[in-house]
Structure formats: C-alpha cells, structure tokens
Length: 384
Image (cartoon, rainbow, N blue to C red; front, side, top):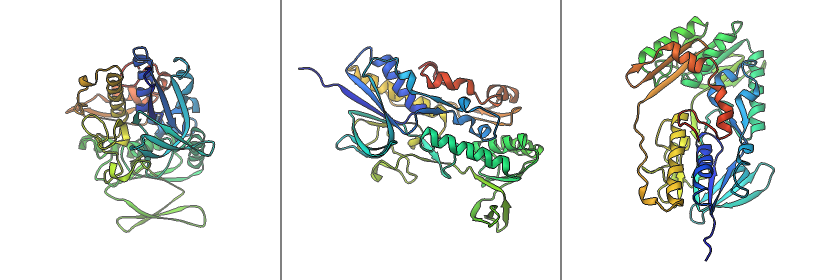
C-alpha cells in the first residue's frame, strides 16, 4: 500500500515562515519525498521591516532595498513539492485539519493539512506600514503614502518610544531639520525595555537632533481639525496639534483565524515547551504570533528553525528525538538613532556604539534582504 503524501501548511511568508519552508525543502525532502509544503500568505514579498523607521523617510531607500519577491527561489525545488496560496487565513479548524482562506483575487478556498505551522507574525496596533499590512502592493502603497505625508508635514508627532518609535524619531530628526518633531513616550524613558543609561543617552541624542521628547505621557484621544491637522489629547490633560500623527504603540498577534480558546488575553496563540498548540493536533505556532518570547526577528528565526527540526524529525521517523525549545539565552537590546549613534546591550554588557552604528545604523542591514528572501542565509541562524 502506497503511503499518502503528507501536506505541511505554513501560514505566513516572513522570517519564521521562510525558515520552516526552505529548510524542509532543502534538508528534509531529500530524505523523505512524500510530503509537500503549502505556503498561505497575502504577500509574495519579504518586507525588510527592520529598516522601516528609515524607510519612512523618502529617498533613504529604494523600494527594492525594502521588498524582495520570495516565490522565484521556491522554483529550484522539485516540481510539485511547493505550492503558494495567495490569500489570508480566515479560520483554522483543528478538528478537520482545514483552513478557510480568502484569496487575494477574491473568493474562498479550503486548504487541508497534516501538519500546520502558524507563522503569521504580528501587525502594528495602528495598522501603519511598519510591518506588512496585507498584500505587497497594499503595503507598498501605504508606505509611499506615509513618505509623502512626512514630506508635506511641518510638524510631526510620534507616539510610542519603543524601538520603532524611537528609531523613527531619530530618522526624522536627522533628515528633517525643517520640521518640528515630537516624540511622546508613555514610559519614563525612551526605549523602555532597555537599561536606564540607554534611555538617557537616547533622549539626549534625540534632543541634539532637535526632537522634543515628552516622557511618561500617553495620547488618549485624537480629533481631526477642518484644516487637516490632528489635535491630540494627552494623558496629563494638555493638547497638542500637529500636521501628522504617527502612532508607534506596539503590535498585536495576527491570530484572528484561531478559535478563542487557543488564545491568551492578548490574542497570542498559546504554545507549550515544544511550540505546539495544546488541543490542536500537529499544529505549531512560531514567532510573533505566540506568547512565548519578545516579538523580535531573533526569536522568530530561532523558533522557525526549531519548528523545522521538529517536523524534520517527525517526517523522518525520529519524533522521539525532539527536545523542548530553549527560550533562554543572552538578552539583547539593539537600537540606533540615525546613522551614527548605536545603543545596545548584551546581557550586562554595553556594546560599543561605533560597532552598533556600523552593523545596523549604516543601512539597517538591508544588503541581507535578497539572500534572506531567496532562501540563502538568515540574520542570526546561518544558512537556510
């Protein structure tokens, strides 16, 4: 009796998803050709959103430095081993092992799986193009629109002083000397997850670039004025009027397709110590979509590699060798303020600023986009 060919479905097309799909096709398929990988995602391009803070400033990057197609690289694998479904998952049914998908072109289809890896990532709370917000075309159009708004604005307020908001304020300050830039931090320091000395240096650097920094304050409301300006209502009772308001207030997991009983209070998909979803047989959730670790590329990559290793073991009859995911490791913080100032720590060590600015501040590592999108090399997990 011929064994039925297995189907591994990967939801998503970014950091974790690419690690799972390429590694299975490169390393597992030669050992067991009786499976195929189906990738379901609305975007056919990898967005190097690490560089989004600088990408918001028109003229700093060409589009091709921020986006690169992922599908041509999959043509190198044996025919029939890979399929791409251009669409968005609307509902996962763990009982029937099926996914209801809304296609980009319109209409719906059902995708069945034997094994499912959910790597749908997260989206900005404010639905701005700091990350993919749908298809490649829509995300790119929204990025271009934001660039134009920044060009036209004389005053800009950025709310949220995490890595994205803080870096964006730095880019605006460095490249928009004719504009009034304000950064509003809901925390007591810029970069609230970093050490206090990092926060102090970030604030000082931003102020030297002409950025006004308001700490321990939140935007609690906004009103559009007749002249197109935005009136912001702050948590201290004051108001602030600006030409352009850019909220950078965090991200939320892309998990709306999962039944509520699989989610935590923040809509993250709950996973166990092997990144599997309890109560959903043969389902893994990796990267920003789960509750396990901070939502950064480093962890998305590592979890994607782990999911690959788990599936590789299962598909080659070595399931008993799967160990628990190791979520420990050195805690790192890395951010830049413009091209020349780097702020970073690794554990208790503060890294030299010149090294950080060289590694990230020069170009936000955009030269790594093409080899990543084409399944050649990752940021921190070596070759695919």
